Structures are given as structure tokens and as C-alpha cells.
Amino acid sequence: MTKLKIKKYGDFVLRRKTEMILEITDDIKKLAYDMLETMYLAPGIGLAAPQVDVSLKLCVIDADPKQKSPIVMINPKIIADENKIVAGEGCLSFPGFYEDIKRFDNIVVKYTDLNEKKCEIKAQGLLAKVVQHELDHLDAKLFIDYLPAWKRKVIEKEIRRKKKIGDW
Image 1 (cartoon, rainbow, N blue to C red):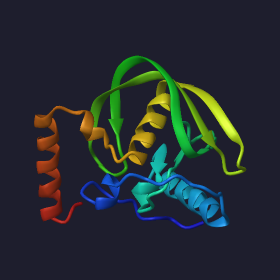
Image 2 (cartoon, rainbow, N blue to C red):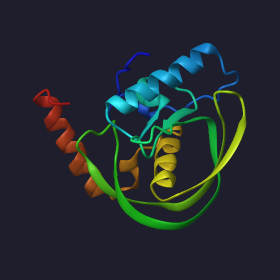
Image 3 (cartoon, rainbow, N blue to C red):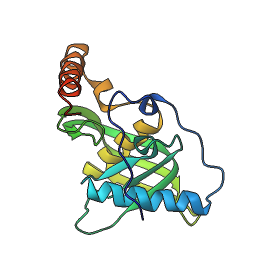
Image 4 (tube, rainbow, N blue to C red):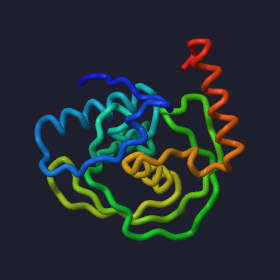
């Protein structure tokens, strides 16, 4: 497996919509395994393909990395949701930034796994939040898009400062 470079806010690929995966090839499987390794090493609990410069509908999630129970989702889609809550959230593409984001606490998501099996899971709490966050990446949406304009501007100003001093 190979550790991949995680793209940070400002990189074009994070704002590009992803393409459906039509066939689960060995290259797709390798990408998924490399993404898992990258996610664990970051360390993180979710990673979407655009974050590693690939515009495909693929994400990896492990809401409890100590248990090593990864989920690989290909062409995922949320089919039901309920009960919005506000909770803290961060992103590997925004290192060091955490904000309260409103998300659904309960969702049902359909996806295909690496063995081409059609899956459907009910997720709640942290897992539901992570799934929604990663699926947003697949639609070119970032967690700061949920923030008020003034808060986004504060974060963007801090990122520009970090870039200027070479800390981004």
C-alpha cells in the first residue's frame, strides 16, 4: 500500500464533482486500500477520493479506527435521513480547523463495496456525520460551506496567512 498526498483547501480537485465508478477494477481496489492507509496515518476517520486528487465516487470510513472496521463506499447515496444535530467537525483537507456543523444524526446509505456487493446501512451519531461529510466531498461540497459567510472569511484569511508563512 502507498500513502497518498492529501489535498488541502484551495486545491481545484476539492471543488470538482466526481464521476460514478462503472467497474471495480484492481486499480480501484488499490486506490481504496491506499486511501485507507492514508486515512489511518493522517490520522483521520474518513477520506474521499477527491482529497487524494481522484475525481471518483469513492470514500473510505472508519469511525472507530482502534477497532479497524473500515467501510469502503463506491457510488454511495443517502436514501433517508432524520434528526438534525449540531456537533464539532474537522477535515483532513483543513488541518487544524474545527467548527460546529449541523448534520443528520440518523441516515440510511446505499453503496457498493469492493466485492461488487450492493450494501445498505443505517448509520447514527459519529458514523452518520462522517458518511455525510465524505459524501459531501464527492459532490464538491466542503464542511466550511455550512458556515456563515463571516466565519468562512475568517478561516480563509487564516489559511492565506498559513500559506504565506509556508505552514499550509
